[in-house]
Image 1 (cartoon, rainbow, N blue to C red):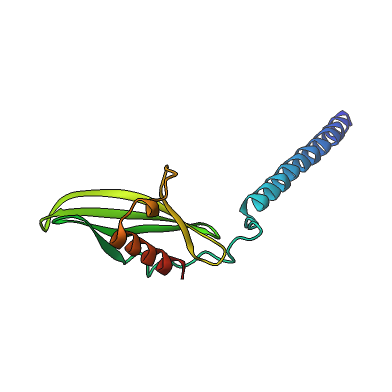
Image 2: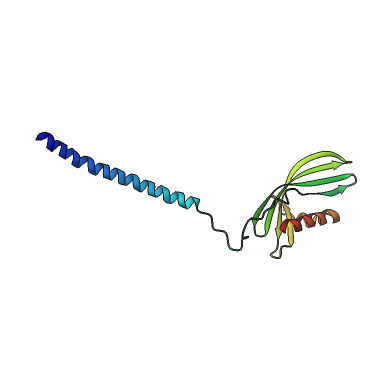
Length: 154
């Protein structure tokens, strides 16, 4: 009889303990699920942002050349393109410099192309700088950058 009383007491202690532990584990897993769901939810776009990111695959294959003086030319090869917002596009160029038709230098330059709401180019700046390169480029080079900017926003 004593054994039955001990078993009964153990049963009364163990069952509530198991229920409490399992309820706590269930609460933890429910909290984890909520956190995961919030983290994986798509972000809401800003008002006025472009409806979708543009496909720049056709631009990534483009390049253009500008003259930098007598016997000097620079070829700008598009390496990467990023839509920053509805009116700004970031372009990473690999630039090859040629003097007398011989490649002398290769480097990377990044430019930010800023457009107005009518998709006309307003300014082009090197990343990290504020100076509009359109103000400093001479004739042909300025026109080439403007033509590239027009193609980029299409």
